[in-house]
Image (cartoon, rainbow, N blue to C red; front, side, top):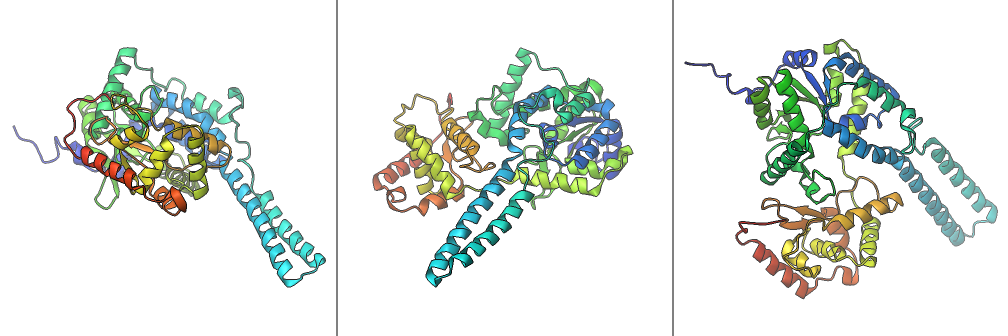
Length: 445
């Protein structure tokens, strides 16, 4: 028996535009968590366009129960954050207004300017910054608040109507436990999907880093049940979902995922970003505005782009860590001295922790304090983790890292904050040498 060059190699094949359109018209249309949450970030016209497209394919929509769970888990944070950009902009303008007035006063004192002239300058400054402040709304018009009653959230009401009978049933307890275990195994071995969420191993989430895999398990089950092509609409463009060229261009879904889906359904997996769904909306007979796709792309890029740490925000977190008696402040400082990375052995020494104890949850105080300072506007939203665990040997923490900008910030501080402690550096280098040795066959972290 013979076959052609294509059969059996479906996971490597790049679909045509016609094949994508056919899948949109006939296949399962699944929605990722970010697609639902980002609806709160768009303007009314863009939301209307997206909902119109989804309404047209509503009889084939599918939302995994894990997506619904993540939506509710993160919805309040998204609503709280809607006003952050406006608050940050207003706060920056107010500071600039004050600093400009101070500069004018210093200049006036050195040039013997009259009181009348100084007041005229101050009035112009107040008028200029006042007009800007009036233009900047604290939060989007008509956006729901975190405390808005559920039935008064118009977007949520529309979504609930749209997704009636489209949300999957949760896994039973045994299946859930098995999926979480398999998800953790995939994270440890960098098998898609979900291994890019490895930092969630340190989180309080019941599923740990297995959230993406739980979604995938439900998608496989639904695809196997219906035997249809699957189009997953997602704003997640990380490498554990997408196949990329050496130049970084997105080619399509990871070949492993295409193969796995084909194995259970005999059909093809497609991944589509929300902006591309809008651009393809004519395929399902719905017209959308070009501006909607542009806004979706802009919001997706803004959400993906991390805000850099500032000197003030780093010092604010370190100050609270020190005040509350956590060794994590010392760990962050030493990691910065060493170029951004500190081995686990040295962390045990700085924390006076017995090596029989696990390091799981070690970064939680840093995350908690960062969150508290964000609510007080002392740390900007969108910053990367100040201290992140890394897992080079299975699920065992091998080392911790701080962002590169934090390395630069702490290296520029005067005095003891940046002076290299010879004894500490020597101990750290020895710890690094120990880490370079063979990995243990068994670990519990």
